[in-house]
Every structure is written in structure tokens, then in C-alpha cells.
Image (cartoon, rainbow, N blue to C red):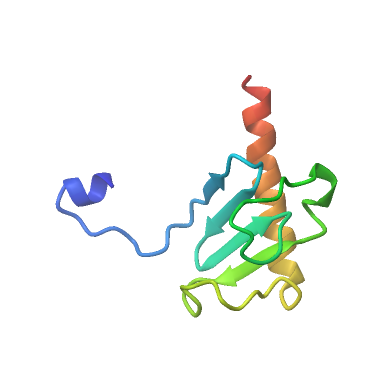
Length: 100
């Protein structure tokens, strides 16, 4: 946001990941064109609580450049991206736990 306030143009896709968290325990991470949602399948609207042991086993992956409405789950087609984003997200979550 600061670049905009300074009259500069912001990069469309920042390399810095953005992390999201719901009240039901669902975490998501967005980095570049990819968005990963841990522990849930489909558009459950956050009704189901996420089981911690399921986080790496199931989830959703979207390429937001090609699919901005998150209609085409690519979780099974891109296991390398799933692994990478899960590792980044777990590292961030662990850093937050260490700071408590």
C-alpha cells in the first residue's frame, strides 16, 4: 500500500506471501499467482472445523491469474506447488507460535 501512497506503482504479484486464517481454523496462503487453502475441499463456506492432521493431505490450489474465481482446483495436478506453499505456510505458522 505504501508505494501507492507515495505515487508509485505496486507490483501486481508480490513475492511476499499473504496468509489468511478463518475462525474455523482454515489457513490459506497466496504467493504470486498461486493460492493454497489447507485442510478443506470445495466451497464449504467455513462450516466444518479443520482437523490438524488433515492439513497436508487435503486442500485446494488455484492459479489466480488463470482462475480468479477459484473454480478449478489444481491440488492434484501440481503437487510440487502444494508442497512448496504448505512448507512456507507451516514455517510462518511456527514462527507465530514461537512469538507467543
